[in-house]
Amino acid sequence: RFVEGLEGREDVVLYVKLPEWFKVPTPIGNYNPDWAIVLENKDDPARPRVHFVTETKGQTDVSKLRFSHEGQKIRCGRRHFEGALGIDYVIATDVSAVKIK
Image (cartoon, rainbow, N blue to C red; front, side, top):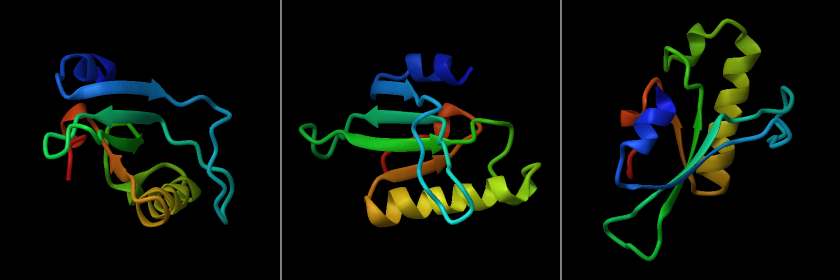
């Protein structure tokens, strides 16, 4: 359903299911986000926005994930992408959560 949602949006320029080898090192172990998505930027069309999306499962509350270390890796991933790289990072249950901030 997530891919169908991406396909149905006019503002999605590109999306990629990230391969297993795409890893972000964290203090808890390597973290592999699910998707990278590029959206049109209506404020500045020459500069599309990259989004990294993780956890396209049924919830956005990382504290409720089955493995606590998974939630910790997600929090580290968010700090890496948003804090260090300035890239939007979204935890989504469906494609509607992916938008230009």
